[in-house]
Image (cartoon, rainbow over all chains, first blue to last red; front, top):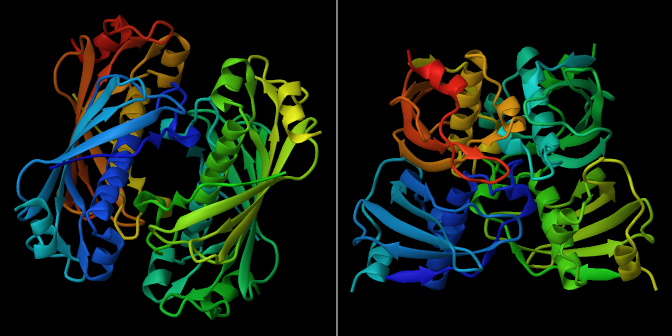
Length: 132
Length: 132
Length: 132
Length: 132
């Protein structure tokens, strides 16, 4: 399964004095893109947290191919790598408005009970989205 | 009453492509400086929140005189403007390592019950710090 | 003259442990909204910098009425207060998706030559946008 | 070669509504720690950029073991993995004030000519620091 984000602008405050988007912001862009994807699939991550499930990032990987610049419009292609179980694994490919490949990435998210902060299995309503 | 912060570095990720510290970060520096001041006065803001009191910023003002740059060391002078009641009012003057005046600022913080999110009066242990 | 931004989402990374959007982020939202307004008026702020004009914020004011939360959609109404001369003065009113008044703000931006970092007058092509 | 950072506080604005430090901020902490290490070895990264060498991050990896919280003091152990050539490779281990293992990480930095943005070899004064 795959999703392509709407264009996400590189904002002025995302840049650093090198003139590039600061590398830490790609993780924020990934987060926005996967929350948008969930929203489009009918899942509110906000509601999920209110219902007691939090999904912290437990590992991530980033490979930068080209820099991105202020005002660029980034398109993020997200895929699910395998059926979610104890974790939900996303991979990301980022292009700019000229179809230049900017960055590739990966994040693994855990499912935790927000009170106990103990790991739980992927809730059924999430599992069913990504597996038929 | 007055406090001067330890030198606070402008970090690389604080800069933007203008080469200046991004203006929004001064509010973060103010926050760090006032939390350090409270700590030095014997108050843990972390514990205060655990005890049910949150202190959101309800208004702020910033006047920028000179830019600050990556690696600068900023010194923040904080004062309490008047005895705390429903709010705690801080003013800030920021200097760099060359004693250049960088910025002046002001923030007003409210006291809220963290559960009800309703305003409360300044707790006695805070009031007593700033008034004899 | 007036502009209302497209809805701007409060992102997960904009929140703090109080559960509110961190107050410093309103300055970033203001920046995004005014850059979008300029873009809609036919001015690329990116190009303006490339042409040697930078517009740092020289003062700002924020008044918070209600907090905003993760996933909120904020609408920012921007106005020009007076014809631009040595500075460009914007005021902001922020509403959420329920039309709650969230925040009011003000920023003054200077025009600087990016090389000399000396103040310059408002370029004609900017002046003409805001004054008939 | 190895360096242990001074304690770096988790600031209020580093947290998100989960109550954890937002995962993107570890990359900022890594950056601060390696710039401090270079400073201690007698290299100003600021001056290096002024002299025409920029060092963007070209890949990174993060593994989160435990969350960190507001007011935590993080200690970052940095090592150089191999002699610098076309890139400078750092690994990081992060502990909190209780000696809990928080996070492990890795970043690869390139050396670029800041004007041409073309890759260059590691400058001698950097190479000599890390190799005898």
